[in-house]
Structure formats: C-alpha cells, structure tokens
Length: 172
Length: 124
Image 1: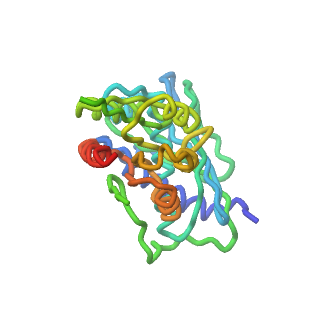
Image 2 (image 1 turned 90 degrees about the horizontal axis):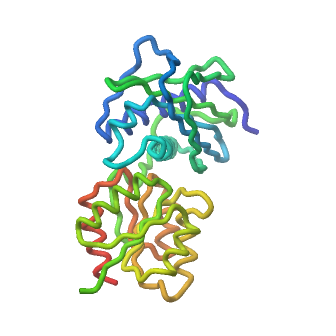
Image 3 (image 1 turned 90 degrees about the vertical axis):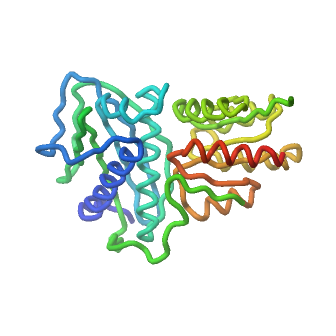
C-alpha cells in the first residue's frame, strides 16, 4: 500500500528541485533559491505543466510553473512558451526519474498537461511547500507530492550507475 | 540527387522545429508528427531514409510505434534513432530488440544529432 509520506515527499521534492536547476542550466538559465522562498502570485501570466509518475514503491505528481521570462530565456529559437513548458515538464520528470533510478526506485511516466493563467497559487495538501526558484527573468516553481511504501528509503545513490546522461548517444 | 527525407516524431513542437531546422540546414527534407499514431501514418505516406522518435508521447508512445513500424517488413532496414529523456536500461534494451539503431538522451546536441543522422541514413 502506498501512503502519503512527508519525509519521502520532501526528499523526492529536493531531487526535483535539483533536477529543475540542472535542466534550466542546460538551456542557459541559472536558477537560484528565490528570496523568501515563497511564490508571489501576480497578474503576470504563469504557465505550468503537470505530470504523473508511478511505480511499485512510489507514485506522485510533479508540477512545474514559470513566469514567461524563464521560459523565453530557455526556449530554443522559434519555440513557443506554452509548448516549451510541456517539454520542460517532460524533461524535468525524466531527470527526476534518472535520480530515482540511481537510488534503486523505478517509476514510469505519464505525459504532461499544460495550463496557463494569472494569480494562480499552489494549495499543498500537507505541510510541505513547493520549491521556488528565481533568475533575472522571473520565477519558477516546482511542486511535488508523492505517496510511497512504508519501507521506501532514499538514502544514497545506487551502486549501479545509470547507463547515460544528457547528450549521450548509444548506437546499436 | 535523391531526396533524403527524415521523419521526426515528438509531441513538442519546439523540439520538432529545433531538430527540423538543424537537419534541413544539413540538406535533409523533414516531415513531422506529434505522436505515434500520426507517426505511423506519416511513415506510410513518405519515402523515408530515417526516423527520429521520442518515447513519452500521447496516444501511442515511441516504443510502441517502433514495434509496430518494425513489424512491417518494408521498414526492416529503415534506421530509427530514439530521442528522449529516458535512460532506463529496460527501455533501451526494448528499443534495441525492436530494431532501433540508436538512443540519444535529451537535451539534444544538434551537431551530434546531425552527424548521427547523416551516418545512419547513409546506411539505408
């Protein structure tokens, strides 16, 4: 049985936050912890992507939200923010999956859904709050809630490393 | 000169545009599809030298599209390169078993992608 577990959610949320920083860095945007650490909702448009993951010992949902600035700054030429947020969500959860695999936890991914609006704010179920990051172009939020088996621990990287990392190519 | 046509299947329009731009600059013609269902239909309508295929897509994912494509003998020698964030060994093995020629992990490095496509497409 999988149950809400704040300790596991906090660890997985930390991994997701690290994955988000690495992801935006790969596209030339350096994110840091936002001053104050809270999400300031405003009339500015926010785009968000949500994606689920499920495995035998862990399941959850990850939401990536961003003001337009970081999306425009990270998006390849010709791309549109409302498409790019979906792809970034996909790549974020893909990176999270890689980190979980390195810790012996297997999950499978859904596909992202995207929404946009102004004055949106997260309403967490438990005590955990989303990770809020910032760059010169705006703010980014990563929100993850998870349920896990009671025996699940995420202590250190698994001794068997993953087969590859970003940009790697395998020819068969 | 024979046209070299590549099919890129990815649910992200941004990724499709990015890849298409690089391949067109290298002299390839590019056709696009947003998921595995459209990808199979597009493969049936075009004379392709190569397919680039995302994994996590709606309707029909990339591994399922690959398996359906390769179950048709006329696509037996068509090179397929998977382009995805996934690094799970069981997925890579499944793609290899189904007949994919390569697996590339996003974010895409365009120069590496173009050189790989050029190499694989020339074998078809």
